[in-house]
Image 1 (cartoon, rainbow, N blue to C red):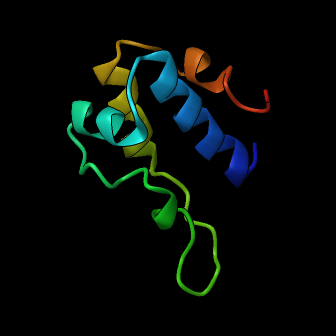
Image 2: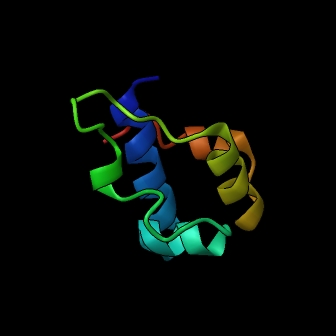
Length: 76
């Protein structure tokens, strides 16, 4: 599981549920900018990973389990 795979999974998961990443965040009770591409890297170039809490919230909001989310990792 890589940084890129996790973020791609979030993007694909949002599309699968008919939303943008910001729409998925809002639906999940998160700030609309939580999953913005600009927040995926720190100013000094270090990767920022989504929190487990953020992942849990999108799973809850879409009534989906972790397995369904992770199936989006590593697939182009």
